[in-house]
Length: 124
Image 1 (spheres, rainbow, N blue to C red):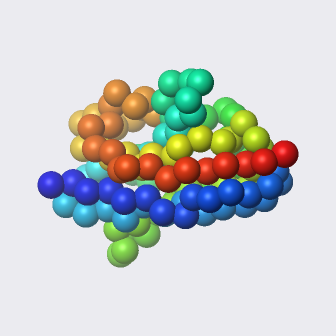
Image 2: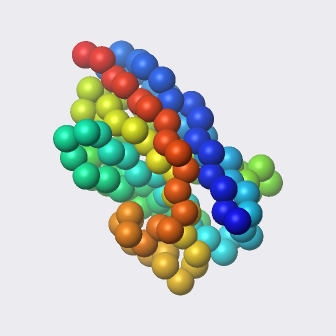
């Protein structure tokens, strides 16, 4: 059974940084893609970044140049380094995983496994 657990959320002022972590278990790392999504109460779930099975990455235009997704295969952990945070980055952030056949797109519907989320709040 795939399990994902996020950590690292919190409150920060605009311009600050946070690093989110996602501890993963229950599947063979390297045969799945991993991603970060976010949702705030006024919007639907938005894809933030993903890392595919070949190591390639994709980012939402709104976070390009500010966020970096990475993984540590030895620790089965996914990270999201978030710099130059803006108030509009405020949301619940979720880690997600998908088996290889469903990878290739930063779309929530492609990811069947989800963590519980970690809140990020950016104040102006």
